[in-house]
Image (cartoon, rainbow, N blue to C red):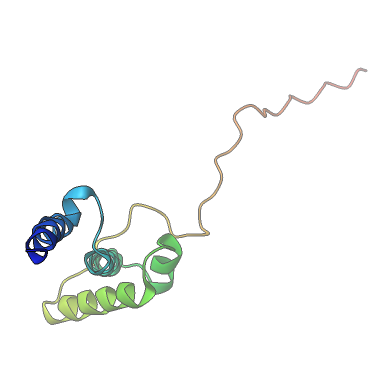
Amino acid sequence: MKRFPATALVLPLLMALSACEQLGIDDPVKVAAAKEAEARAIGSACRHAMRAIEDCYVLNPKAQKAAVYAGWREMDEYMRENKLEGVAPVVPRPGTVKPPPDEEVEEKPARKASS
């Protein structure tokens, strides 16, 4: 009869642990798959926006580079097969952003030379 209480305690514990996602504990496999899918989507979007893969890496430093490249390559193949044109990006490429002119600095008019 000692086995019954041990089994009765282990079974609810196993059932509770099987629902770890409900407790807020993320499954590492699902998290890795989600990160890879997001990086592939980033790569696809970069290719569709006619961005170079290097620009894509710079704009998304936290994304997995291999997955970004895979998504970029897949979109490139898709666009070539279907003869699609890319969309011009609205956000300027990194390094080409010019700072706005200072509005506070105004040129003073030259003083007239006194005769």
